[in-house]
Length: 203
Image 1 (cartoon, rainbow, N blue to C red):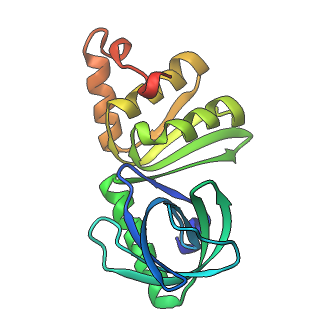
Image 2 (tube, rainbow, N blue to C red):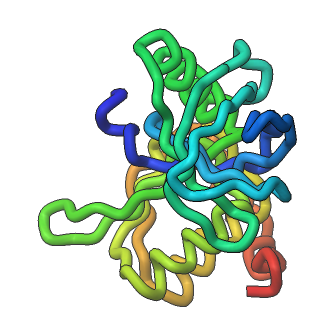
């Protein structure tokens, strides 16, 4: 599981806070996404590429993760950092990711080929937080099927995204977790319910 998720970025419905130590200063930021190998942080601190920083954060009640990292990229006030971590921190980070996905507070979206078909797989929460990644996969990458077996929590925004995929792009809904299947069934059971679902952020 660790190797599979090493470079997969998890996104959050509510962005976790992070404390950053850099150049003798302590500042704060928000974690935009997280993987086993690093994270993307939004901060007002003047971080510089190729410099080391200290990171302290929790992911929704996880034990404190205290890790050294190097800054590898920057776009505006968003910085990509690569962890310099040992086996104990790797376990803490992996456990935190697993817990966040299981609770639906975080999500992973990937597109892969399966028997010549492009399959979008969603793990964790299916909600409007995924809108940009979801629509990019639909319109730019292309998707024939959505694998929803790993979905642990779904809301109206998530149902709306799936409605757009099915009705406007002809995408098939594949394997489904029990929580998604029940939510979709309930939505279908109410006459006109799916038509009233609004695309998040006006999409």
